[in-house]
Length: 488
Image 1: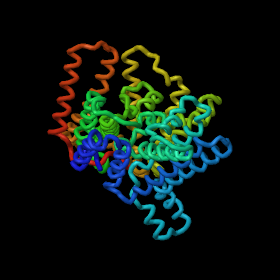
Image 2: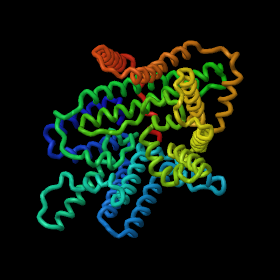
Image 3: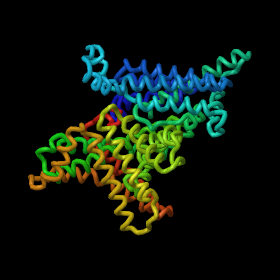
Image 4: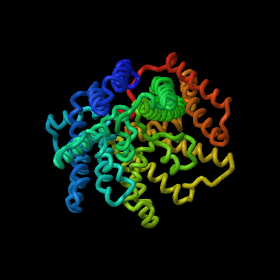
């Protein structure tokens, strides 16, 4: 079920009305059931995967939390993490594995059919959430900052009569809370990736009067504007540039990749903003996932602003455990290359995505070697040059991200050699027109940071901008498309 569909609007109205009226004493259960309906709407067969993930992780995390035997807790953690990885690998990397294996031996028809199945929506996101639940549960006795998981077991607990009933009711609560943690529909399909300590303490009864309407509406309007007006229109305008570049002018191909850079940001940031706005309507706060990434002055800064929930997950659960930057220069570079490779493969089992990850890993290593990781300049010209360089580096990498590897060379040749070809001025103009708001949005944030004072004029201007965005959502939305990151 897409956020930008009539079906979802009806679904949202019904669930919201029940949540704050008839079923307010059963809000958690209502959200769980509603989220299952939301997930099953387009692909009901994949609901079994979500159930499996919830079952594995709720059972394993409960055993880890309540058991004091270090060996048991470690063994349980390793097995459950392995099950999460296997579940993800079977469905996300089956096609890659079959492609490689078929070079050595013919594959049975059943195996080929399984490899061609569509990727279950959200599996990458809720699998990573499952791993974080297991790891954080294992660390609960050594890291005071993660005791919120254990404390959450006691939330919304019914009265108990005996010790056995107490344990049973608390275990039931943990399963229920874990089911909501995994399935909560605003972030189920494409994040943000939520940590247990961010979500579990929020579970409880919510009141209509406590809704942050201002923040929710601002996020929803901005999110729908970027998705439906910018991303969907850019998808229509850039498709010719991305699929027929061999016959196009180099200027048009560059315009197409500029448009694609704005589209992928608008689509995913738009989804994240909508998810945050929807969650606020139900009394939950999701983490920020994008923080004006196209104004970054370094690649290191870029990855603290782009898909923040994934980049911080990789940092905390891969980079730091591998040693981070604490074990010498060579090990730091190796760790950077490895985690960026894994970050590329997280997006899918394609060679091009692995190369894209290595491309960014190499960029981070070179930047670190040259001492460019920190923002030290106060010169506007230097800052502008660094921001432009980082953006162009990221935009160029999207060729690896989006195109099959064998087409990358052809695309680069078109950009370099086709400057005498006739340019499609209309398409290029429309791409630039829809790209412009993305960069204006980033520029306004930079200006606001330098002028933080609050005034009535600023508030009025913000309200006018939001009103204009809402008007354009109603009048100028592009053809409704699936969110770009649903394929990951």
